[in-house]
Length: 453
Image (tube, rainbow, N blue to C red; front, top):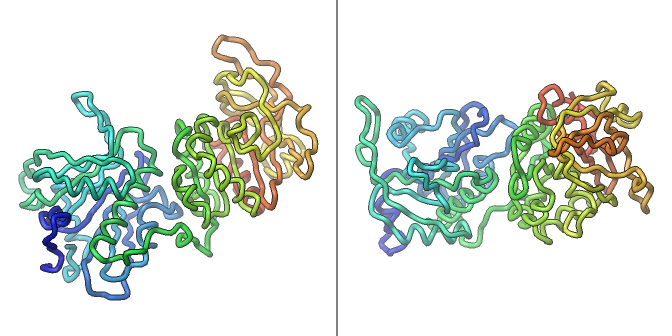
């Protein structure tokens, strides 16, 4: 323990901590899987025992923060990640760790990662990554977190709660630090920031070699086909949650991990067999990825990766803007805002073959998805867009106009791009659990396999 208490000014915040680095990251209210313990050990067993507590991923096939952290190649010491479906509060943390950890392997400081912070009672929500400490404010901690997250982080003091009568709370709250993010921060970026913060702490304390950093390639799993799910700029609503469930629950040999634009630009697609872009705004997706991210997505597909785009992800895949992916040579017709309606789509013969035992007519939600005129769907070099379903009924726009012009046009289609496969959906069948099997077959096709229920 004495070796842990360094004397330089940067390490003062470590010395004022009571247990060891424990971070709790929220999962957006999704149903979590069971409790699990993940570990990583350094080549040199001597060193600190770092414990990280995270909310369990939605299911065992989600490659969340725990899997990502334990992929770090420790040089010394031990890292334990406790995934739990019932995250303890500060007062219950001591008894939680005592229950989960062997008596002879105590942790060395307690961090509590609160995930995205809702608006506070005063109406002032968190606007930057914030570390709340129950001791004096520490500028060195803010500097370390800002460097680790590559964005400004702040430290603020809070008044500790009084332990409830009969609780197993620690007698000292000074070592508890809670990390919260602005409300609406995507889960992918919460995970990213926390991963960066833990990595920096491990390196700073010598558990990681100075030149060692997180590598996406270490997530590669030979037993599973990993799918990257984009959920940052341009993504709205519940589409990502539905698609994550479909990918992890309906595909037996697939795992899923969340990514943002920074992740993709840094190589997050390296371990993946496919990538999914949900609904929202194609323009904002393009802006979030930036030119380098878009290039990486194109290269990924050309080299054999799969691509599923839903609504905004379909816009983004096509050629309606110079900032889109321009992997599918189609431009959406105008006006693009055709409203929010329940519509019917009818599978083509090619669609029936791909989707297997699906009904020929599928009733699904439509939300301003792209409509690509049939006149554009001709061969373009080696790219031939295959229509899998057409709109059978129209949508009604926000002004009450029935958009009859979309009837008969493509609702779902597929194309080969280089060595990869792309499938785009204008409507949102993923939001209806009755259509989960239908969407799973679409994902499976992009990955190069047979359909799956």
